Image 1 (cartoon, each protein chain N blue to C red):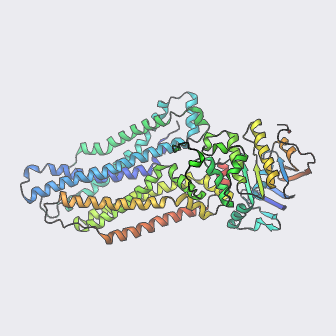
Image 2 (cartoon, rainbow over the protein chains, first blue to last red):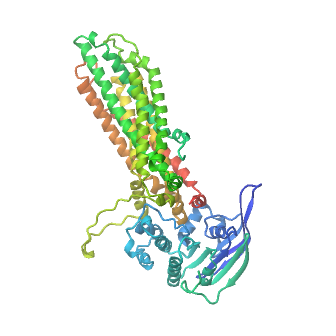
Image 3 (cartoon, each protein chain N blue to C red):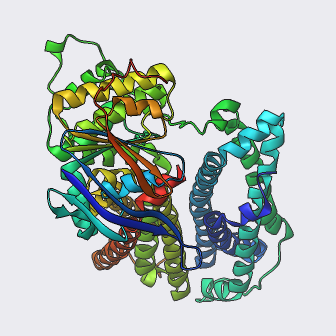
Length: 230
Length: 389
């Protein structure tokens, strides 16, 4: 379980200070699919960075089973990310000079996983092991980043606008892969997006506006990636 | 236009390399030209042997040092142009999309020749200042008749203006070739990596030999090295320069003057540091995103730095060994072939003491530079790198 207690985060100096997160508190249950919705500039990406240990909050707590990651040193945070979280970004961030196989191995080696190739099969890229990122379509690159994130067996998967750079058909396909893999591996998903439709797939929807949580609601009737609108 | 005069001033490496090359070549060639003027006065015996040996030394040093530095400067120039095009892809793509021809855009790259002109002019100036002392020491034994420094306009032109014109031309031609990339590819900032693919024979799965899989960080180390061969060359070259020039200056203590030794040490250190700093800076800047991504996933700082910088260590030491062999061969040939008939030149043997001192100082210098850059890499902000994308 992840508990976020009253976190604040500001950027800039004294004269030009912008408060991005203004006392956020929320809870994410284990195995849940949480979508954080909000317009551009609402603070949702900063919240994701803080929750995943990429950034430290100015004040407040981020508790993973009672362990406050806001108090960890940089080295401890690195270890935490290694053990606990996986990431999927809008821009994929694949390493351009490594082929598909090696890009996924980046994640797998951290978990000491030898059977990472099954993850590539699971996202339908088993035949493209030796292709390089620039030889793949956007959807295929995002599927590689899904395989890379899951190859390290994360307990929590953070998604930052995972379909932001994809067309509808490819976006649905990627979401479907993520959703079906979650059912198989039971990890928690925290997804940041401005696409209202993706929220229909989630178990919990958190709405943000101007650095504050304005609504948290549970979704009783979750839809599949092919049932939601676009 | 995208390329400005300011861009040409940033080519510090090219300036230093061309400056060193022209300093060495000017000293020896000017001396040779003045010496050739004395030929009618040169009789037989010791004077003739000394004369021939000095002429030969001048030619060998100019060809070897000048040639070596010329090739390196050309590689460095191409490296700069390729980097420039990669970092200004969008601007260049927009120009092409607007209708500027490849030739018109590449025409602007002539300004890169200016850095060569500044370097060669500085090198020529330094050589002019050193010449009186150089002439005195070259004829310390007073075997040859006395002669003074003369100015040779053709040599000045050949060593300053011509290289600049040549390099301006090379810049235009090379950039023209590189700009043949389609407009959309430039605008999309798509990676244009040329990854060498191994030819694979398709065999049945059962026939495939069991291939040992390397850990990811080792794979990354290998691919980082393979991704930019020019950087591998420059790091090897830095070690080569340091090793050969420093050991040569030690060994030359008996064979030549202190002036010559000091010149060798200075050129060796300047070239080695320039090449090493340029290459490592490029490695660090070019791999910021990789390091950020590794850290996002939970790789430790030590592992990240090791996988990016660690692979260059063997390259540096191989460069050092090649430099050692090169200086030994060069001095051996000079002593046994060029100065074979001169009794005043002592026999040359490999200097193990010099080798040891230079190796230790190189290891200390190299590790210090690596430590400095490792610290720099540790400060890479994950968020900043990701926001840049």
